Length: 537
Image 1 (tube, rainbow, N blue to C red):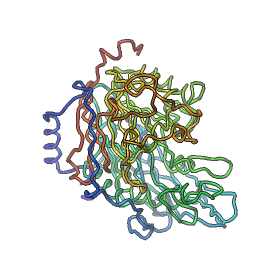
Image 2 (cartoon, one colour):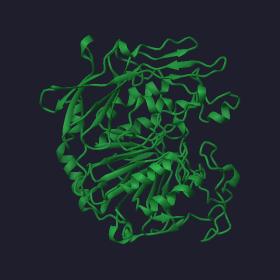
Image 3 (tube, one colour):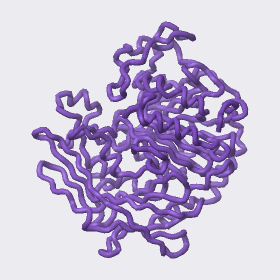
Image 4 (cartoon, rainbow, N blue to C red):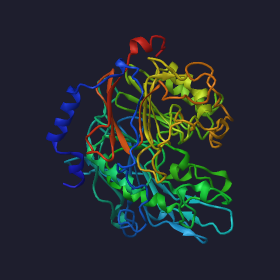
């Protein structure tokens, strides 16, 4: 049972839930735009525990010996017939005197086969270590365990595989894990459930989100940035809910890299069995010596960058059945002359909507959030890229960063538009920075415009006052904007179930509810005949 039972959740309950969903009388975006709804924040209601799990928690401690694999994960390549298996062997080191492990001291091997048969296939990959270095007196440096990445190719679609990873020559192999491949790309094939969550971190709230994710049995997990929150700590392990508030005299934004190891151990029961695609957010920048950024993020996980024509691990694309996902990043150049923008132009141009009808974009800081926290922070990115996404008919956009839940009506350039994307902010996975409550349109809560631009997002200042519409002449609305359909300050995660070419069921699940109870649910409906009339592809 064990891992296999996780992937074959009692069939009766699963089928019953899907029957309820398919036949449920849920609203659709065709009925919109919806009147804005704000669920009032209730201080008397339990909203979880935004405190990090300590390093003494059994779920984050190292339990393997020698070169036995740990922190095992699986991620997708650009299409269904290939996945990456990743893991770490050997222990990391942190301190003033560190000696990196030798990657050549252990092999990178995966044995695998279709579930129920022998694991008679073998693939060999590569390994390396990474360092997080700080050229300042008193700061501790870090060197990782040996990181292994192995690519499995030639896989069958929609098929359950079993695998072991490690070094068979020294009897250092992992337990048996399982993953299901994506269906082939076509307008009739979709993963059953895509889980979406942002700002997960490693708190007691994360534990609840993690438990609900496991219980909802996704086929694919998309993690919208805010992963380990190692950057909320100094290199000596001292943490804070507000790094710049507590450590304003730090010569560089330090991070405590062992939090990445804790996160990998904690998440292994999910990410070793469910393909997981990650998005680089603000907490993954982690600057270090020689101006290197995103080093841990780019080292610990594999991304289908090369397969999708990207030169960077922080922006890439992949297919999951009839869904084409585009992952973007505002913390690297994104203006119209940048490599990222040019890559995005080419990627969107080459999308065949007859094969992958659904187009989903994902990045970390939202364009259309009405919460005070991070309000209009990524405005320069929106100015550069929104037209391109609109012209190519992006259906849904997922963002994190704001620690709350919000779903928009279809919107383009701050105006209601039946062909604009539905924007969903879902940065409520469990962050130690706690839940966001205040809205920019609350009385006397509109932030000073000059304070909203994020210095990590290039482009200068773009958040000017609105020039038209109900908020003309102001930086904020004086009520919940009409483009905001639903907002609520609660921790949770979301499930996307694409049913066919035009209908996808979106459900958001609060942590404080039973995992199958949806706090917000509706069908997102595409209108390709109306909205893609001018599309060349």
